[in-house]
Length: 430
Image (cartoon, rainbow, N blue to C red):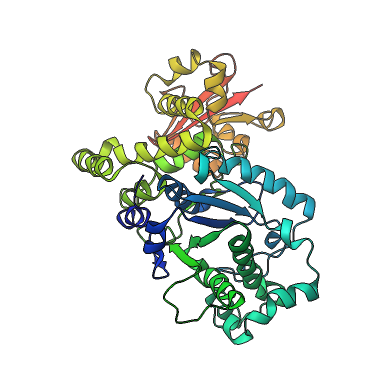
């Protein structure tokens, strides 16, 4: 077991915490939770830092709880948002909850004895509340002044915030109180943007339990982790096509692996500390090796392999690594010719529709309109790329924009199209 706070400190995962937490963790096995709103059927890598908090907490001998917010998900957290969220139906929220729980089970141990992880749903305790009942149970314990002092509210006052979203912190705060009373939860954790919502919970607990504000013994604690950003300060977690999801049907394992593999050298020291379980010594050794041969992308490969294995499984990760090597290999034609069906399912194959293919007279047409501008954004760009010696078909350079589409297809189905050194595509014709 590790010291939880010290582990977070060296990993750069500690932003703020209520004083006395270290003493509480040293005194006894402690129960902590993090909330996840089921606003989508899958978590994305923006959620992974929070999941890793729970993972480290459990590895330190404590008990993690993941709260899937079936009730709060009906409203949506205003933190970090500039506009009101759309409401989701109860059926959609329930479906999303099932998918999210399955993903959490890949990270946390649910059968490890006293500190086994749990998943709870706040709809289970909010569904019986009447409006008046909730106002009596929670609303009277916080002033409007206190609630308006929170950053998530203050930042929305100019553009407008509905009473529904204004009340979100009260709902989240009551979650903490309910879990404190029924699950012995003493700590809520989250990203740094959640500090206001989390401390609302500690305040509700303090007031409902009648604790002195100046008491040295605290009933409940808060801890936040820094939001993960790139070295240039921009938000981390999105690719050119949007969110990078943990669900293979929303982001393919190949694209998932490539996202981590393509991380910038300036970003990857932080990523490997936050998103993997490598030890301090292991990471520092890899950093030394990476500095001596950065072209080998040692750190990127280490992050990509561990995270992809955890999310998609070791077998799929092995196929993805093989697929990645195939796509960029000089022997790609031979490798694809001998590829197994399992390997082909992990390759980023673009299927050219019969209707679009019928519109293509030559290679220029195929790599522009025929692939819906996947390879080149226009016929003009396609002609320029071909004439500039950038385009290859099955690893053979083509310099004539009017080249007919009579290329030999690999396995009778595939063409390998290269556009420069870094961009490779597999087209499928059925």
